Length: 133
Picture 1: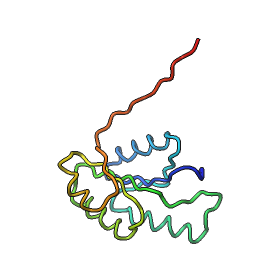
Picture 2: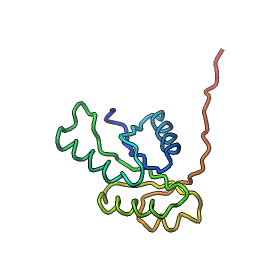
Picture 3: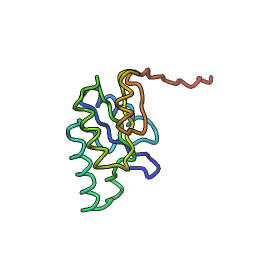
């Protein structure tokens, strides 16, 4: 782990979406995925990370609490909002950025107190530098 990186926890019920987010962020410079989990296991994952840090410390910088949680709410299942609220209550200082399916879903999610909202649908843009002869 690089001390200048930002550490992120990926939360998504959909395993494919979670894997895709991990792949994209793991390849992006400046980001380190510390863990990935489903919504129901978020509190357990964060508590385990916190306990590991307290018990063994930052051994060679290998254990970090996330700087941010990227939470994919999928297709707005009610239980996802329940777990999101519970996580925010237990870890209030930890910013959460939520991926939402549509602008219609943004209101209830924003009301939970998340720090940011992003549309779930996105297009990956690849930059190809010009080739010099």
